[in-house]
Amino acid sequence: MSLTITPLSSALGAQISGVDISQPLASEQRDAIEQALLQHQVLFFRDQPIDPQQQARFAANFGDLHIHPIYPNVPEQPEVLILDTAETDVRDNAIWHTDVTFLPTPALGAVLSAKLLPVYGGDTLWASGIAAYEALSEPLKNLLQGLTATHEFIKSFPLERFGNTPEGLARWEQAKRKNPPLSHPVIRTHPVSGRQSLFVNEGFTTRINELSDSESEVILKLLFAHATRPEFTIRWRWQTHDVAFWDNRVTQHYAVDDYRPQRRVMHRATILGDVPFFR
Ligand SMILES: O=C(O)CCC(=O)C(=O)O
Ligand SMILES: [Fe+2]
Image (cartoon, rainbow, N blue to C red; front, side):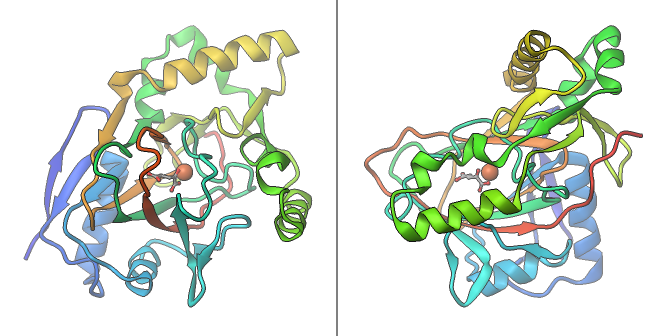
C-alpha cells in the first residue's frame, strides 16, 4: 500500500495516510516519509494508536533519540516524554518555540502522539521558518545572514517553575549546569534540503550577538512576529491517536493553552539533530 500525501497549506503541513506506523517501516515507506517531511516540514497521521515502544521505534527510523533533561518520561521507554497537564502543569509550550535550541545539536524532529484530549481546545500550531525566511526583504536577508544569536535554557525553564521541590531543584540545577547559553546562526541552512530558514525563536533566543542591546531587542521582536504570521503557520485540531511529526530544524510550534481545567496528555519522542550551520 502506498502513502497518500495531502498538503494542507502552501507554507507547511501535510496529512499522510496509507501507512501503519505502529509496525516496522519498509525502507521505501521510511524514505517516502522523510521526503514528505523535507517538503512539508510537519506531517500529520490520523488513527495511529501507538504504545511508547512503537513510538520510539518509529522515531528511531530518522535518527537517534534524545532523553529530555527536565520533562518526566515513560519509565520503561525513557526516550518518550510525557506532557500531562495533571502531572506537570507548567504551560511551557504556550509560546512559539523550536525544541531544545539550548543544545549544541537541537533536535532534528519530534513525533508527538495524542493520548488524552480535552473536549475543546488544545490545538497546536506550527510555523515554517523557510516561508518566513523567503518572505523577508533582500536587505534584511543580507543583514541576518552573517549573524548569530544566543539561546538559553533558562528562558523557557526558569527556576520558579521547577524549583519547588528539592528533587525538582536538583534536576533543574544540573540541567542548567549542563546547558549553558550558546550561539546558533540566525539563518540556518537545512543540512539535507539546503533550504534557508529563519532560526530564532521566542522560547529560547535571548540576543543577536553582533548587534547592540537595543538593536537586538527590536530586531528579535520583529523576527518573532514575522516568523509567526498566519500565512506561515498551520493549526492542527487533534483527535485521539493522531500523530504529528515535525522537522524541528526549520519550524517552530505553539501549544495553545485554552482548555483548562481539562486534562490533556501527549507523548513525545525527540530525534537528535546536528550542529546548525549557515551555508
Ligand atoms: O503539546 C503540544 O501540542 C506540543 C508541546 C510541545 O511543544 C512539544 O511537544 O514539543
Ligand atoms: Fe515543543
